[in-house]
Image (cartoon, rainbow, N blue to C red; front, side, top):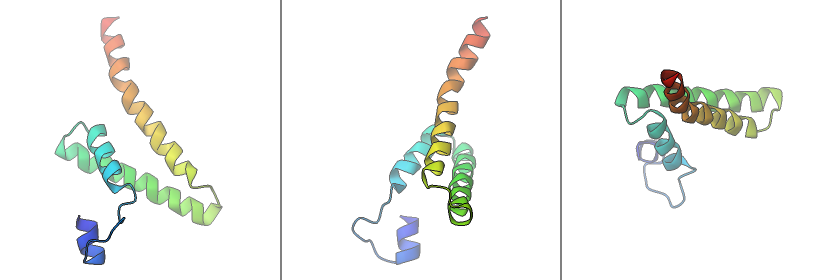
Length: 89
């Protein structure tokens, strides 16, 4: 809502380009921790901005951003299983 009210000044139909999904994903990756949400959103912003810059300057496809975010998601999803097996051994 901050982006819509700050940038456009009015609520537009179909303004969301996955913003809600990205917010949910960031909150879930951070475990709901407020500090974790800030840090995770910064990391995701760096990945997206870097991907956009690489797309403009090096002609890399936009899918690189999605691949980097998916890799980050898989690492976070694998983390609890890795630590659980390590403690049992």
